[in-house]
Length: 145
Image 1 (tube, rainbow, N blue to C red):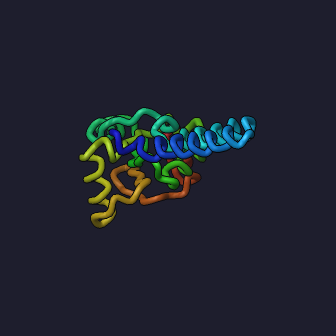
Image 2: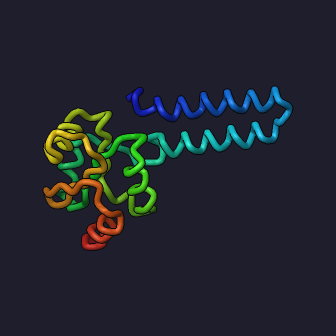
């Protein structure tokens, strides 16, 4: 759980240090702007921008019932963030599994990727797809409606 917050925490810490230096240098406006920038970058690299994660077992159960894709992801992954942002509102229709919080989810990803924890790994109808195009994932969601 704590591992997911290391990068965002470091970004805020570095931003605070730079902002402090700017304030001491007599530039409070620049300090505020830089701190805001670092906080925004930290937020986009945190678990906060992703829909609530469920366990791999729960995601598999739900997917079997409703046919929706399962996305295995981890905080700080730029490809996961790309998928999340490009899905937009449709991101809530997907079952998200944080592999850093769920060892069973990490095992599923390793099984699908020859032992590597490559994310995002999207499972549709029992078939794993590593780092698929967001448009393809959106297409899979549109087939459900």
